[in-house]
Amino acid sequence: MIPGIPGGLQALPGFAAGGVTSTQQDKINRELFVGNTPPGTSELLLTHFLNAAMRRVGLCQPHETPILNCRLNPKFAFVELVSAEMANQAMNMNGIPFLGAVLKVSRPSKYTGPNLPNVKSWQQLTGASLPAGAALDAESEKMSRELFIGNTTPEMSEGMIRDFLGNAMEQVGLTIMPGNPIQACRVSGKFAFVELRSAQEATNALNLNNIPFMGAALRVGRPSKWNGPPDQHGNWEDILAKYMAGELQLPSNSSSNNTAATVSNPGVGTAIKEEVPSAFSSSPGRPPSCVVELQHMLTMDDLMNEEEYQEILEDTREECSQFGKLVNVVIPKADQVGATKVFLEYESVQDAAAAVAGLEGRTFDGRRVLAQYFDVQKYQQMDYS
Image 1 (cartoon, rainbow, N blue to C red):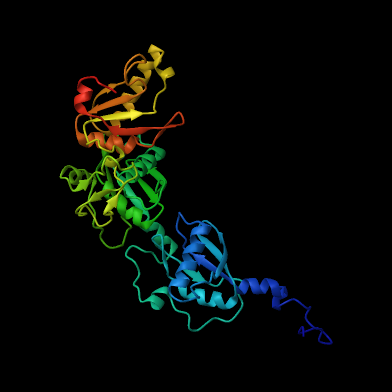
Image 2: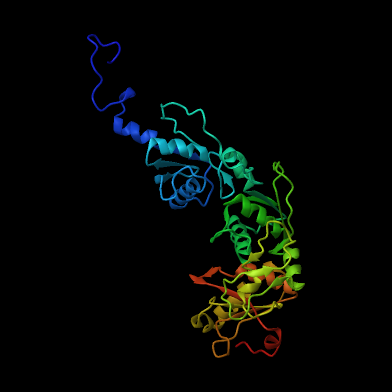
C-alpha cells in the first residue's frame, strides 16, 4: 500500500521503496564500496586480490569467485558480488592491507538495508596486526607516500627530479613493480616534494639520501609533518659501499639483465630487498669502473656534420656533468671503431654509478639509451669496440 493515497493504492509491481526497481535494489544489495585504494590499483588486480583473500580465509568456498566485476575511480572503487549474502561476507575484509594502504570496505551510501551486527574487521577476522606504515585514512595514506627532497637547485625541473630518482630506484631495486614509482613532484625553491605510488616504495626511496644530481647531493627524507615511526634505512653511499665490499653480488655472465643481484647482508636498510635488480647488474660481467658507455643515443647521421658533432659533444658534457666530476667525453667519429657510442670518464666509480643509474633507460630521439660500465684499460688504449 502507498501511504497517504486515498483508497490505499498498491505500490507498482517491480518497484521497491523509494521508486527503485527490485532489480536495481538487488544490485545495490550486492554492491560494496572499497575506499582508500592506492595508486597502482587496477580493476583486474583489485578483483583478483579480493577474491583470493575471501577464499583464503573461508569467506567463500575455494572454488567460488564471489566478486563479479569492479568499477575503479581515482581513490575508491565499487565491487559487485554474486549475491547479497556474499556481499555480507565480504564486509569482513574491511581493513585488509593492499599495496601499502588499508582498504575500507563498506556498504555504498545508497544502501538502505539492515546493518549487520557481527561484521568483523580484517584484523579481527585473521588475528593479524596492522602492517607498519599502513594508513587507515586517505590523508595518512598520502602522507606515507610523500618524501621531502632537499638541496635542489633552480636548474632542476619537476620532470628531471621525477625521472632521475625514479630511474635510480628502478636501477638499484627499490621498486616493487615495473615503471617509475614516483607519481608526482612539486618543486619549491631549494627543495621539492615527491609522491610515490606506494608507502613501501616511499620507505625504500629513503635509501637514495645523498645521491648526487647536477652537482648537488640530494637530501631525501620524510616531510616535517610525518608522525610515523622512525625509519631504518641507509643512503646512496651505503648501497655503493656494499657493492665495493663484495656484499652485493653480480649475477653470472650467463644471467640476463633482469637477473637480481643478491645482498648477502641487507643491512643498508630494512626496506632493501634481499634480491634486487641492481644498477650494477645492468652490465653483466662488467665490474664497475669510472668509465660509462652509452649506446643507442646517436646515429651515424649525427656524426657526419662536424658542427653538429661538436654541438652534441658539448651538450653531452653539460648534461652528464650533473652526476659527478666528469673528466672527459669521447664520441668516436663516423669512420672510427665504436661510432655512435658515447664514453664518459668520471673521476670516481661513485660518480660513474650515479650516471649509470640516471641515464639507463632514458629515451633520446625515441631511442632507449643503454648505460653500462666500460673497461678502463680498453678506454685508455682507445679501444672502443
